[in-house]
Amino acid sequence: MSIILRPVISEKATNSSELLGQYSFYVNTKANKLEIKQAIEEAYGVDVIKVSTMVSAPKVKTRYTKTGLQVGKTNKMKKAIVHVAEGQEIDLFS
Image 1 (cartoon, rainbow, N blue to C red):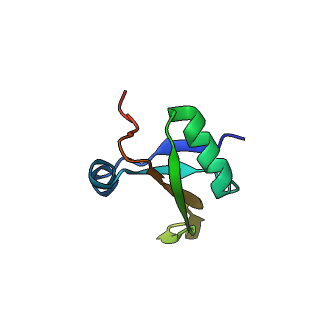
Image 2: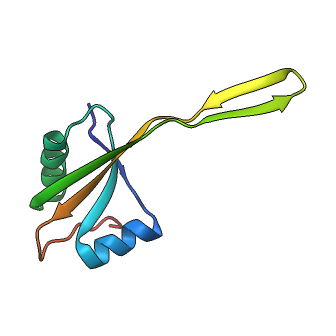
């Protein structure tokens, strides 16, 4: 089971990583905080102080077409915000 899916690259995530040492990652929805902490420490070689997680529910989208009502939904995503020890950083762009 791959725990870390990809880093979150957005203006808000980049700002918090530069100023506060908090890095955001999309992770597997079944992973818990301890598994996320171990995966980040192994992958990037940093000391993780705290892990915060949030789950975004799938969004239902409907549209009207010639053939009738089409209903679809997006995927459920889990985001983890990782607080790294002071003086350490993760290079996401290398």
